[in-house]
Image (cartoon, rainbow, N blue to C red; front, side, top):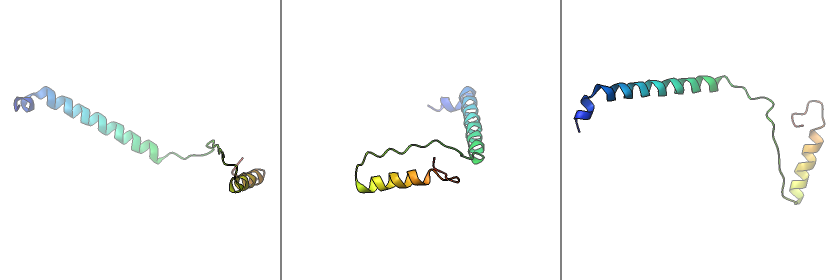
Length: 72
């Protein structure tokens, strides 16, 4: 069992794996800190036929036709 820790091949492969994991983790952190989300398509599906659901649909339709509307 202790012979496994004496082999250089195992230590080198563990070191390479740690370096690769570190590089990929660093790349993910850097990429996510500069991302700005704009103009994301969004869909709202209303399967409810109740009064509240109809009011939400009416409000969204009324607000979506304005010049400065964020919902279109």
